[in-house]
Image (tube, rainbow, N blue to C red; front, side, top):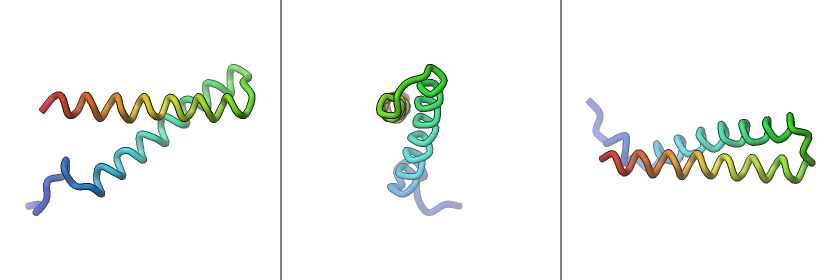
Length: 65
């Protein structure tokens, strides 16, 4: 039996957000690269998509409870 709540564990939340950030960065950068964007736009689209994924998924998870 776990002695902590995995939803409120700070380390668990950090690792989950890092994973979603990496996935979002990969998706955003990959799509921008395939569309032939410049290196600056590739990084910017990766940052924007990862922020949308992290904040979008975290807000939905909090609203369900």
